Image 1 (cartoon, one colour):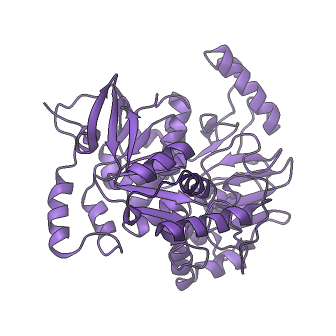
Image 2 (tube, helix red, strand yellow):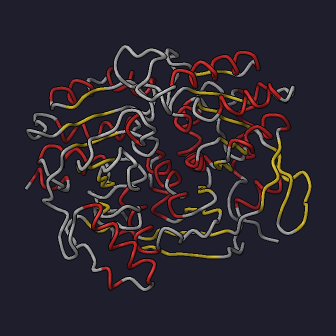
Length: 468
């Protein structure tokens, strides 16, 4: 019987079918971070259980650490230092590889799992973070879990998982030169809704994906969870293999040759069936910006904000009305030209080297508008170092951006650093919920190019505005 890519990986990891689409699944990799991983490790120790296989578990400081230069264990989040020290102690006791604050390979978990070759095609990987699906760009079966499941995973290398339905999203056509993967995924979510993924394992495919660089693939898979997907996944191809070769934990020599043979089989067979299929004409996509408090509430940057009455359900209409009130916007208003107070480039969605290059290119010879606070937080220390080697940091600072250490930073507010209440921020992050970047903060999701252009203009603008 023809199998999907997800079918093949699931079958390779299914230990026992338990009925009702539920199975006991083997886990190849487990990733922790200081906000929840420290809790799982402490709970494990208190119950007198051990980590089953420390060699397959990894931990990183990323969520609540400061990103200010010269950082220490002290954070702006109350009790943040306790989480940091707890993870350091727990990882040390268990023998887990920790990417600590001062580690040259430190960074956001989903970025360093890729940069270090920890995530590989065909592997299963979990982390107590919803955006673990980012790693599906490498052909991994990767998904986010809760703290209790994380504890169980550490103790047994297994989890009981309800097998998701499957969806294929096929992208035809070609992206316009001014359209990025971030625009593409916002277009998808706006068109089909935040629940459009229906808890499915979503395979992204089609000529647009084949032509897409790895950075764009990471962005697409990262936001599969914003589409309510269980995970996102892309079949590994030569681009993927080229990306992985030479990574610290990736196979080498004869093992690499064998791995490549296996990876070549990780494709959806002709005739394989999906529970749901969507086709998108990517050539119709334009630069996107969110107007509300969900990624689904997004429009083309030059389009009008829709009337709440146009939404099909009462719940959607109420949500749109509440979002417009929170964002201080009006139906029929165009986002292009709306003044902003701040700009943020960072997060596991858009803080890779190519994202920083794109923004830095637009910033060259220009300066952030007066009164706009602009911040750039690289996704990993390796990315930060590579950017500095290319002189990108100087372009950012010359343009008036703050240049930070790597971490999650202002992607989310956890009682620490945030923007000011009522401020309007254009951001490369993945979520724009109420209070996501601080109480009362109004967040507009966009691509790095749009964020850079908006910071210069002092108002939401597409990158093409700079050449107009």
